[in-house]
Length: 435
Image: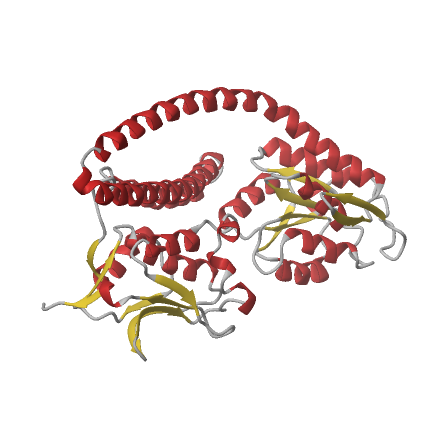
C-alpha cells in the first residue's frame, strides 16, 4: 500500500471498546484514524476533514448507519467516499438496505483484524466507480412485499454479495456444530419437561392446595424465564467488553505496556461486575419456592447500584426510609435497569432523582433525570418486546417483573428536559413501617 499514513479513515461507533479496537488495528498499519460516536457528529467531521474511507456501525442512537451512508452518498462532494457498514447481518433485508443506502461493502461481526484490513485495503486501493446520480432511474426491487430503490453500482453490489457469501461459507461449519448442540439440548429439555410434567401431576393430587400450587408454578416459570433473559443479556455484554479489553491489552503488552495495564484495569472492573451478576442469580436457585415479599424501597435503590457505574452522574435517593413495596424478588433488577438506561442513553445527563409521590389517590415511585428525554411516539413502544430486542430487553423485562404483583410502569417525561419513569403502586403493594 502506498503511504497509508496519508489516508485518514473515519470510524463511527457508539461503543467505545469496539471503536478503540478498530482504531488499534488500523493505526498499526499506518492509517490516520478519526472517531465519531454518532451519525450527526460524523457528518460534521466529514465536512471538515474529508476522510478517504468511512467505517460505520449500523445500530447507533440518533442516526443509524444506513441513514448516515445515505446522507453521504446523496451529496456530490461526499458521494465518492467509500462507506463500509459494520453489522451482525441477521436478515437479507440488511443487505438490501445497505445497497439502498449506497454502501460500498460490509464487515460482518464478529470480525478479525485480518478481515478488517483486507476489506479496507481493497476499497482504498481500487479505483472509485462513480455512483449513478440519485435523480437517475434506480434499480427497483421488491422483497417480502416491500419495495426498495437501489442506486448502487455493479461493483458495489458484487463487493457486498461476495462479502456475505464469504461469511456464509465461513459460518457453515459452525452451523453444523451448533445444530448438533441444539439436538442435544433439545433432548435434555424434553427430559426436563417430562420430569416437570410428572411433578405437576403429583402436586395436582393434593386437591386442597391445587390452585395455590398451580399459581406458584406459573409464577415460578415466569421468574425463571425472566431471570434467564436478564442474566444471559447482562453476562454476554459484560463478557464481550471483558474480551475486548483483554484483546487490546494483549496487542499492547509489548509496544505500550502502560496502555496494556490500563486495559487490564478496565477488564478487572468489568470482571467484578460479571461476578456481581452471577452472585445475584445464585439467590434464585430455588426459584420455584420463593414468592413475592415486602422490600424496603430505599434499600433497593442503594443495592441496585452495585450492578452499574454512574460515572460522573449523581444519584439522589429521596425515597422515605419507611417505605416498603410488595413485589417479586427481581424488583431490584428493575431499578438497576432504569438507572443504567438513564446513564447510558440519557445524553448529557448529570443527575438522577428517585422520589415517592402521592397525587389524587395515585401512589408512585418516580425515577427521573435531566438528560435528553424520550420521543413522544416512543413512550409506549420502549416497553414492547420487539423494541426491547434491540436495546437489551431491560424495559420489557422490568414491566413483566412489576406485573407479577400488578404494579405498572409508564414514561411521562418531557423531551429535552429528561426522562421520567413512574412506577404505579396498587394500594395492597405499598406500606409504611415503623423504624
